[in-house]
Image (cartoon, rainbow, N blue to C red; front, side):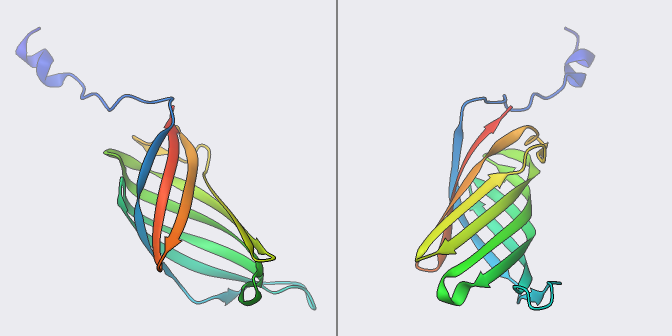
Length: 150
């Protein structure tokens, strides 16, 4: 191969993986005060809150998103949904993806699911799928992202 052909050879991206990989770390979150949403007269009140996050660890970068919620969180009976858009790096791969949240609380129990939105991966994160598990200890937020890149 001549020198000019070597200079124009494409740089290979890290290989895609179909096996599940895990990324761990922490994040800081800032949640804005609630704003009322339209709801029917005499109906349950609906609210939204903007959020921003800064991720560190295996997932480094930032995210912004919107939460919508209803119920009475002060008495442990409520639900929220959210979408957030992340941009940064996942274990060295640069790109972006979105996550969808569904959180329910009732009877002293909480159920939270955070999934990567299908088709939302961009850049080196195109084809990503998976779920993020969240843990809060002493006011600090930790994540475990179980994902696949196709």
